[in-house]
Length: 303
Length: 140
Image (cartoon, rainbow over all chains, first blue to last red; front, side):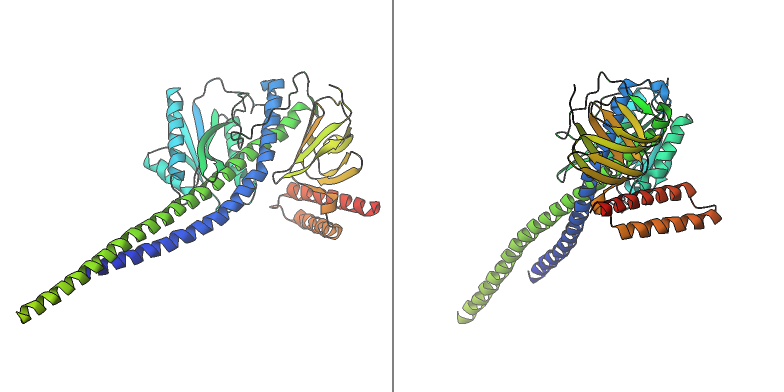
């Protein structure tokens, strides 16, 4: 019996150690999350305003003014950008994003888009896609610390180039939208062509929707001219949208990890409590038995 | 709809820098400086590095680098890459930054691998900041 209490004690200690680790990871994630959430909330205004402005414009002007606005006649090749995390231990964060991406890929396939090129940002997403034998065309390194729009500059340049040269006929992005530390939702958003669909814009989660400034009757004038303005504006918009998606995913990852670690710490607590109970019972049982043996032995001698 | 005020808003990727009602707004654009008054026609233009002035009861000066401006229905929305209120700019630091940018640019002339246009854009931005910072001093 002494052996079994020893084993239980060892196990309690080992769970205690795991708890220390998960607790520490929770604290680290909480700190990172706070930063990431601040970043995402502050840049939302910009990306939302930019998106609204363009959507406003798109309704007023002819799509022929800029190639990035023009949908291709037939969509043959689609590019799907998947933003995931570099590390695991964050609950369902990575697997949900990947599942959403694969679901979207199936949808595209049903629509007859056979050729799909994947662009991944984040190690975990890349690994899952490799396992499911997807055609990964580009693998970007997701920076652990997001410094600024410069982090997505190459990606956005390549996507715009790819769209203009006809390498892709459509570009979409799969990211995880940050709603609250408790709720993150994987989302798909079409980046190119910039169509008029009044879809959910990035970072515009339920409840934060604002009424669009209506400029129905107005004809816009462009200075110096429409081409120049769009040439400036549209690539910048793509950059900002990609950047926002990256920030949203980052905030989601840290909150998902924090929650996962919090749950792990709590489970460890529960397990320790349970095991302590078992340990005490075993200890008591062995003491009772020892006493019974002693008194039994004594009775035998006295008899 | 005809009113006598504009609603002005300037946002950068970091935050909403300033939001208020205004009687007139002067903006540096690619084709020169323009002043927007109430009931301006809908307009979209490219913002250049320079000095932005919002006049309500008192003028507010800001330094902006590149970006975009949209005017519609008496709403002015400015999407700037960076924007700073005059009060936020330290003139000494601005001067120093301007000098550094200039130096970098002269050094870059000899090298080809440096992105020259990025540096000249930086110089322009610093110049605009300096200008706005000086403006603050004269007013005091």
